[in-house]
Image 1 (cartoon, helix red, strand yellow):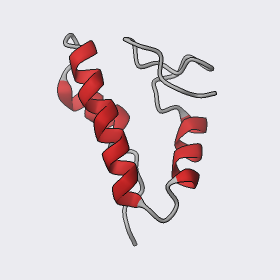
Image 2 (cartoon, one colour; image 1 turned 60 degrees about the horizontal axis):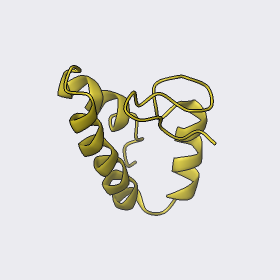
Image 3 (cartoon, rainbow, N blue to C red; image 1 turned 180 degrees about the vertical axis):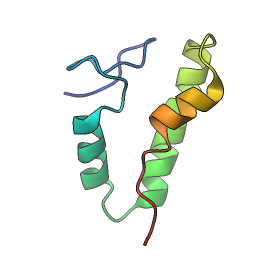
Length: 73
């Protein structure tokens, strides 16, 4: 499963920054009709990542965890 390793927030399966490509695809599929739910889920991960990775700039973590989500059409 492509889930985050703590505290690194790298994918446990492939080692890429989480959410990796496979995790993004699974998340978009799981939250297909619930973009708000996806953003809330990712925001919870962002909050945890900010606590676990104080050495990383918050904007970099937000870019990694949140800013990949496709925009509405």
